[in-house]
Structure formats: structure tokens, C-alpha cells
Image (cartoon, rainbow, N blue to C red; front, side, top):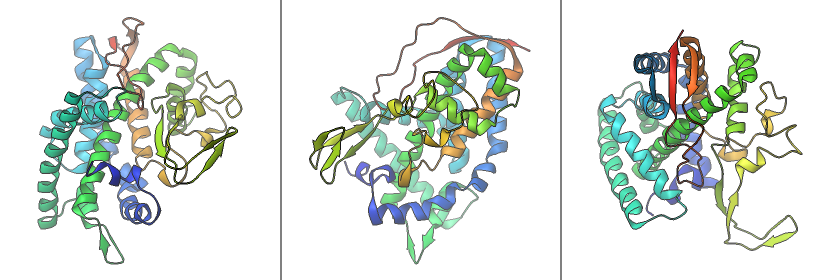
Length: 327
């Protein structure tokens, strides 16, 4: 309750403009592109480990550890934090986006926030005394017109980074693999280089509908679809439905690389809340899939049944058993 109202995704007006202006430089394309070698190394290592096993759970072996490794590298924290980071992301998303959050789930999230805060407050102090070449240093040092981010704002940004930068990417990696395996013609079109990789990932993310909904509260009366909605109402904006709107996308229920109007996709949100990490997320997906399909002569899904996570905001599956055959 102390931090979530001030997360960058939950603030507007002057507060949002100030925080975003300070943060946006730390997520520039130049900064993200500098991450490419780290992403490259992480992909190679994870794929090599998975190929040694032959049969494995794609979520456990690749989809979860890849974004955890990337986030640790981006923030500039030791890789020993990878395992707790994965647990923190799951604790937060499970509690905050569960249809029926139990007392245990909420207590886990409360404990998780305390653990994250203790870690990051220590890291902030280190960066102030000895600046590094990482995102935490950039955020700690961010200043505009004499204003910088408070510790509360810095902690909130770290919370969002872990939730949005890890679980959403991991879920996207899993759902995207399923879509590519099940759509061989589109997969061939993508891997051949016929379409731009980043644009292809935008279409893949539209199709897999990992981002199902975003929640907002009306600040003024709204008329929509012939209905009057008073102020103070909780609104579920259905991103997944918007991305399958037949009046916007031709044959919306099909994966179609090279789609001409992907700027209409709502995956990364339009307007002032456009996702700061969209370039990094798409780069991770694109690099992983190209390397994985190049390293494997065959990728088989071991079973069609999918056990989805109990989360109404972000779609993901608990496990994806696969058989990987080396090329």
C-alpha cells in the first residue's frame, strides 16, 4: 500500500511527467543496445545447457532464467540475486493479479517488498559512493532542474522493473515458443529474415496475448459503448481483446508476420504510459528464438495441455515440456 500507488504505471499528470523524464534516458535505445552482448551470452549458455538435457521444461531452463540474468546485468547487481529475483517477481504478480488473493499470497508479497527494499537501498548507497556503468547508477544520478528521484521513487521503479522486466518477459518467451512451433509457415518467414525481427516480435506479442488487461480508475464521468461510467469506478482495459479487434486487424486470430498496422497494437500501451522496456523485451525474444531455432534441428512440444498461471493480468503457463534435438 505504501509503494504501489506511486509506481510509474499508476501515476499521472505532473508526478508522472517528472519521474518519466528522469527515467527515460536510462532506457534509451543506446543503453538497451549496449545490453546486446550480455543477452547474447545468456542465450548461448541457456540453450547449451538445455540441449545437453534434450528433454526439459522450457520455462524452468530458459524462459525464467534469461530475463533474470538480463535484469541483473542491466541493474548491475551480482548474479547471485537471480534466484531470489525470480521468486520476488512471482510473489508480486501472483498476489497483485490473482483473482482470489489469499492471506498467504499477500503476506508473501509484503515480505518480498521488504527483502527487495533492503537489497536496493544498499545498492543505492553503493552507487552514490562509487558510481558504476549500470541502470541503478543512472537512476540514482538522474537529475533535471535540480530534481532527482527520491528513495521511495527509486524503490518503486525497482519493483516495477522486476515485475514487468522479468515475469512478463518470461511469460512472453514461453507463449511465443508455443506459437512459433505451432505455426511453421510463419516461423519460416520470420527466421528467413523476410520480416524485421523487432516488428515480428510485436506481432508475436499481439498474437499470444500475454498482456491481458490493465486496470484504471475513472477520474471523471466517462461515456463508453452507450453506457455512463461515474468517477471512482475500477475499469479493466482489455488489451488482449483490443489486439484481436477485427475492425483493426485483418484476420486477428492468426499469427501474421509482416502485418502492416502494428502501430495499433496495445501490447506496450499507447500514450504517456508506453512501456519503457519495450525495446529490451523484444530484443530478448528475437535473439533467443533465432539462436534456439538455429541450434536445434527439431523442437517438439511434449503434450498439448497447458496449465496457465492463476493471473488475470498477465497470461503465462506453468510448464512447457519440450524435446530439443541439436542441429
